[in-house]
Image (cartoon, rainbow over all chains, first blue to last red; front, top):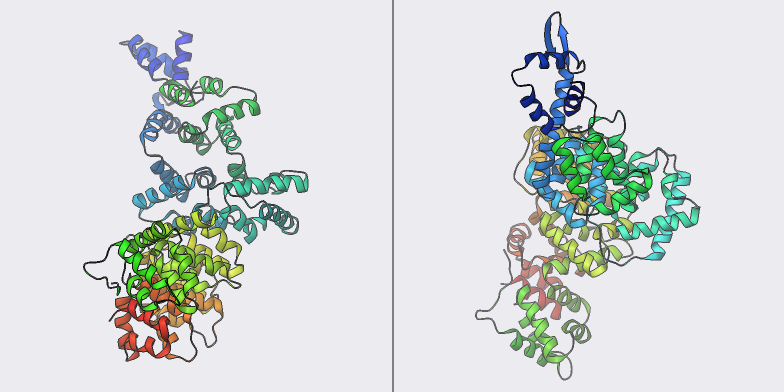
Length: 313
Length: 313
């Protein structure tokens, strides 16, 4: 009986984790059919979910809200799985405008998609919202990192093989100079930093970051200060697998907030057909545990099954 | 509408290639024959002629033309032969690589084209020059010019008809605030001008005019405008009233002293197969003479004949 209660609690995300265990729930309905006492005992044993006002039993409102999120994780991942990638990216970017997602999602999409994919996302955005994503970012986001963000989302980078190595070296030096002279708060609005990061091809930037490390003895990320937007930009362009692996890890952390948890679905859905193998390897190397195992341990039900299938066990 | 006139029936590309070959042979060049063919063929036909010529005579048509003719005539014919998309990519590159960036060219290309037309130009630009147009514009400009040109070139604008009248009022006010303070390079002016759709921009400028009894370009007129304000006004005109803009450019060249063949060539060549008819008609009402008369007065020789053939009678 105690086991049954525990597994039902877990099925309702009572012990945290992502999603709900639909199969266990349905089985419990069968088991406890016509047994209101069982249900009553379950309710009194589950204080996070159920409470009492005087003698009247009621559900906790915030638990109901959380439950809504957990139940819809499977629905969301299924809809997202079927959706065209451009529509997905457009909708995720739109969420940022209305503050329900952090701006880093825009950095992620603008920097990890190919030029064609980003263009497609921009077209989908226009079709869905009758605005260009550039105009919405420029209008709705008025922070120190706005200029960088608008630049990133506008980018239509050259994707060919040609790289001007001398220019890459020169720009590595230029970045070093700017970093030295600009205050760390000013760095994000520096026009050379923005120009280089938002217009150069990814191959060119990788070469530039390599030269930077050779010139200054450390990777550029270490010199960017606490500047989240800059850090994420460099990471997404230079080491996307590392970026994604870290985003997944943050989602699994104790006390992760709602947007961080949503990253789990977003990353796995958007990368399943792209670089999931590389992300899995990176994750294992970085955190010493297999991604499959983390997912198995921390997620439930159909949501869990879908994630495991997508990452390709 | 185009002013380009094509004979009906039109000779085959092989016949045209032969006629051109004959025009090149012997001493000197039969420029009249060249003009007779090239100035009366559309982009697709010119492309076929290039291919036919190269197949037949084992040399590139453009190279041969460059060696046969020279000066303003040669530059005009060279620019004319390409299709509109490649032509604009080439002219953008020339403008960018100039000692001082020839900003009117960049502004015209970025502002007059629809989003998809501009995208096509950018794609050809990438395949020709192994850089994105944005990265070249950004790396060859600084300060306010970079802000303005990069934003105009880089944004993939919404081209739909939807407008938001409340927003138009708000943004007309924002523009007014910046203009009365003399902050012509304000981020808000650049944001509105470069990210809003044509329809939205029209609505905003109309609100501005209603509120202040002055068109926005007049409001930006000062006795001795610096290059940046000139660029700003050009961008506004190109985005909202391109026909008037080009008419004025032509009138300035043809009715004032001095002569600017490069700009004259650019306007005629870039619009002959597009909307030179409307520009011509407006010119006639404004200048009290036909465009043909004005061009004939200020140009001569083969250059004049070529332009007149494109302008059509």
